[in-house]
Structure formats: structure tokens, C-alpha cells
Length: 381
Image (cartoon, rainbow, N blue to C red):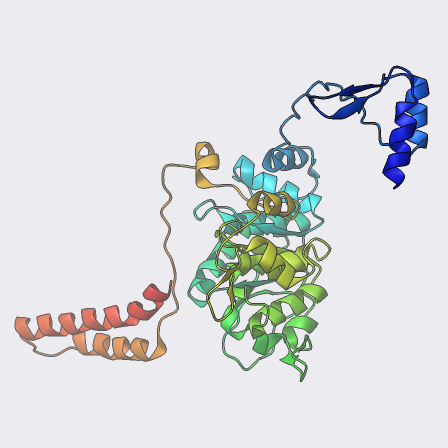
């Protein structure tokens, strides 16, 4: 019956009135009445005032432009050597590495000269000896580039211009002070060993050698963090001071491949693999589990990437590039095919009274052996 009591009190207020259309009691909006109604437990609606719309926020700064400004602000030391003939954007990578204190990722497009940029930092920083991890078909190509480019820098000591190529799963003695190239397939065998809990212990020759710079070419090779090569590379990155991770695959289009490298370079921003997968790798259920083959929250990822990675497309640097460069790619021959070729060569040019038809047949056999010699490494490259 409390409402009856309240109604009786409303009727005692001067100037109150009943609106038959709305069936509501109306009371003047005066302080005395408002105070009484509030004290009686009524809620007085506040007058809504029109608020002017807020001014539109300016668009956020482009992360790549902000990164470029920071890079341009870096002043290189004139007393340190640079490879001659570098394009401006390649010098910018040396600045970026300096900004990052010698540990960064290089994601430039294929054909923009990632190899020479990595070697330019090696020459500038003096981080010798270096360990360069590559795909097997490019080992000789890297070795030749190392000799050619560093050979153009007189300030680099001749003892640091030596390069060796490692092969086979059984380690053999390495020469002190020499930089070495190794392929991803055998990296773990030279770096250390796995223990029972899956942890990789870096106690192999590569970990003890005293390398000052670790270069990983095509770093999507360590995209699976549970693989042996990925664990080996990450373990080496903890004992080798400098690091360059290289890949021409855009991290924003296939982000799942890049967590191990990003975790190495910035563990505070990329600490957890599964959070990274679910946030940035387009998680989808296929009925049996989750797949992470896509990309999501790309702009957010981009803003995080610019702190650790520089990427320029070929279109962006086209003004600096020549119309075309021609290069000879050295490849390691298949040893069995090499033996067959040498036998065919000896047969083709032996001194005898062979007819022209027989000579033609020998040359044809030599050509077939030459093709067999180059087939597997060419397809691999």
C-alpha cells in the first residue's frame, strides 16, 4: 500500500495536476518539488543536452613511414668500411641494423639484393667470423658473393675474407677466424643435440667456434618451432651476438612461418606461439582441429613488425635498380653423376681412329652426362 501513501502526498502538493490523456500526475519543475520527490524515492530524469560532435581523429601515422624517418636519422660512422656501389636503400639497411644494435630481420623482395645487404652489415660492423645458414643449392652462390663483395672492401682484413663451406652430418675441424656457410638440413648436427624434454643444447662446434654474426637466409625454414633445425637456430641465436634473419616471403601474408624469428628478435612482443597463431594467423576449424594458414589483424601485426624488420618491394626501389643484372649461379654437382660425366668425357676425347659417326655418338653421350650432372642441383636451386 506504499503507493497509496505516495499518491496522497502528491495530491497535497500545490500546483499539481492530473493529465487524463496520459493518466499521469504532473508537478512543476521547481527546486522545492524536485527535492521533495527525490527525498520520497522518485528518480528525476535529467535533461539531455545536445553535445557537439567530436572532431574526427587524424589518421594514425603509417608505420613504414615512421620507420623510414628513424632509419634516415641514423648517422653511420665514416671510419667504418662500406661495400662500394650500394644503392641508397641498401645503405638504409645498414642504418637499420645499427638502430637495432645488430639484430634484425630483412624482408626485402626477391631480386633486391638481400645477400649484399647482409654482407654490407658484416663489413661495416666487423662482426667476423660469420655463420651463414642457407638452402643447400645456394651454398656456392653465397660463397662466391662473400669473396666478390668483401674483396671490394680494402679496409676489411684479408684474414676475414676467407670463407668455408660445411657439408655432411659429421662435424670436422674448422679453421679459426674463417666464416662458414652451412645448409639448413645439417645445421642441428653441427650445432648441438636434443635432450629428453625436447630442449636443444648448443654444445656443438658451431656454438663453441666464436661466431659474431648469424645470418639465416630463407628464414621461413625455421617456421615450425618444434623442428630440430628451428630449435638449433634459436639456440645458436642465444650464443652468437649478431643476427640477420632474411626472407623474401611477406610476413603479413604468411605470418605463421615467422613466429620463431620474431620471438628471437623481440621476445617481449612475441612471447607466446599459440597466442600469435590465434591472433595473427587466421585460425579456422577444419572439423579435426585448428589450421593457421591465413592472416588476421594484419595492420596490428604490421605495427609490431616495423620494430624488428625492414621490407622494401621491388616496385618501391625500382628507381635505384638497373634494368637487369646477369649472374652465373655455381651449383654443387651430384657426385655420382660427376663420375659418369668424367668417364664419358674421357671416352669422347680418347685418341683412336674413330669415324665421324662414332665421334658424334660420343659427344651425344657426353651431353647426356652433362645434363644428368646438372639436373638435380638445377631443380633444387
